[in-house]
Image (cartoon, rainbow, N blue to C red; front, side, top):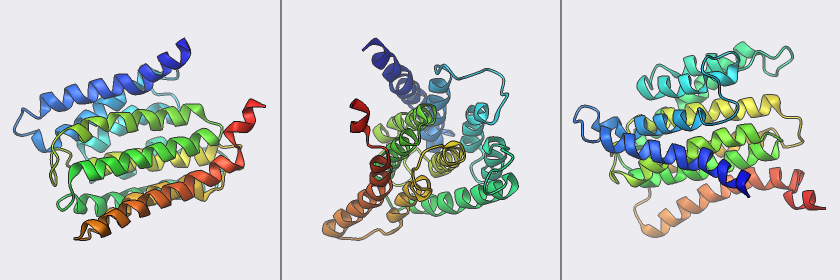
Length: 257
């Protein structure tokens, strides 16, 4: 029980508190106001990272670059996807695709997904976008957990918990989370690829990629409330199609027997 409580504090409470406090402070600075929640999420993620047992102060391996990648994606969103991918993609000898191809693929995927979602933020309420990001992050965490990596699932949990700051702040198009799609998609794309490259499980490859497609449904912005409900149902459906096969490959309930 003490282990579970400690894990929740390190993975959820710390990033939430830091992200909310930083967002609140930056929201009062006129020049930083449009980016307050995005920077708050990045700070929450970084603070939570250094509370984990696997964190180090000086990067040695690809995984150690996550805090730097979060900072770069938050401060220089439009030019940072390639930098984040270069820092985070592992250099495994027999990795498929090879490292250079993976860096290119992740750069294009991050920039493409985030660019479209960033364009949509001037039409969609901030809490809707952040809510979908949190659902996506939760789905990614479950897939990673099923792929036998508690560490990667924790990292997804850190990012998802940090999004609480953006969920609780301004609820209007753009709000105070400008550039957030680049931060979230950039970190999560790389994390899911790392999970795929490291897995020894039978979780289907497409389960690692499909959750990141779900936020694209937000590009469809119907007028009526009934169609908006259909849009949210479609997001949930995509996430479930990704998570359920991963759960069925290694059913959690079988571990009890």
